[in-house]
Every structure is written in structure tokens, then in C-alpha cells.
Length: 283
Image (cartoon, rainbow, N blue to C red):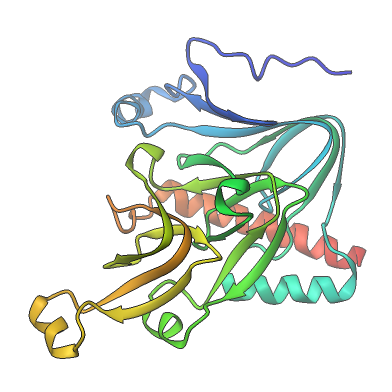
């Protein structure tokens, strides 16, 4: 039996979102910073640039997380590679190459507290039931999900979307029921959620970060002719057609990569490489 005060709020730490066993922790200030970093940290916190962590309170349950993201865990938790044989390993390695996602995502099973590493990104909790059980993600958003959710690699469903969509030819898809945790550059307050019912959404740019697999994604002209599109100045637009949900991040197309994130990506990549080598040796 373990007892921990991590999920208790303090004057500087608060729980900003909770769904089932998933907790999003936010630190209002970086109290442990050096004096040289204090001014930067203060103004960063005023602009909502704060460290956040995902904590998962498992009770005889399981969860799958992004490789290299675990900071600490306590209790009777077991870790496995989430790979079912050589064939499954090969499929995951290919899918990882196509989407630039980690090939092997570890599975944690049992009862205990699992805490992932802090991040300056925004952590979003989504219920797959609100997405008709199938959510396609922009590459790089996945952080964690319930263990019963199936993680697959899917290709774009039309030639135009592959060639002109500027969204990548392959994406990570989550299928099943349960909670999904996403790591987003954009806070929930700036995101736009659009539900379609036998209707059409047209977006001038790659602002969609998640969408229902049930939607048909194509790239189309804004008007009936190429000449009309040129005159209107809009050109080609990403089109989502059918019944489903789309999550848009329209405030900023892409956030410049900070020095902190460059170092963080490098550290995680090295950690993931070591873990992948270990799991391949296991197989």
C-alpha cells in the first residue's frame, strides 16, 4: 500500500482537469528556478507558459503511454512492451517510421500511481465516445490512453489529401473506448471544436489537429473552377465531409521550437532508443 500527496492541491499546484483515472497537474510558478531564471519564469507564467504533468491513478487497470515519458511510478505496476510477437513488432516499427511517432509505446498494468514527465505543452483529455470511437491525430500529439484503446497507423483516404493536404500521408488513429491524453501546443481555450452531421467543413491550411475517422478528407478548390479559385485568392482548401468531429487550432499554425523543446526532444529520443533496443532484445 502506498500513500502520496502528489494529487493534493497546494498554493502553487492545482488539478486543472480530471477524467476517470487521468489527472492534469499544473504548476502556477517554477518555484525551484535559479535566481538567473526567475524573471523569465515570472513573465512566462503570466502568459500561461507553465509546466504541466499527467498523473494516472491505476486501480487494477492498464494504460499505454508515449515512449520515454514516464517520470516516476509507485505501487504494484508492471511494465510491458505492448508488442504481441515479431509480426506486431514489425508493424509497429513501420507505423512509427511513417508517422514519426515512437514505434513501441509501453503498457503499465496493475494498481498504483504513474506520473509522466513535465511539459510546457497543454495536456488535453478527450473521451473517445465523443468521437464515435475513432480519432485520427496530427503526428506528435499522443501522450497516453486507456489500455483497451487500439493504436493504429492509417493512410489518407484520397490521392488529393495525400498530395496536397500538407497534413502527412499517414497518421496515428485511436480506436475503441476510454480516455485519451493529448499534448497540444495550443490551450483548450483557443481550440475550436466542430461537430458535423452530414455536412462539410473547409479549412484554408493545416489547422486541424484531430478529426473523426468517419469523415472523408479531401483537398478541393474553393470554387467550381481553378480560375475562380485564383481570383478569389483562396486556392485549395482541406475539406472534411460527413458526420463526425474536428478539432481546430486556428490561432497559430505552428509554434516555433524553443531551445527547451530541442533539448527535450533529444533527451526523449535517446531514452526511447534505449527502450526500443531493450524491447527488441526481449522479443
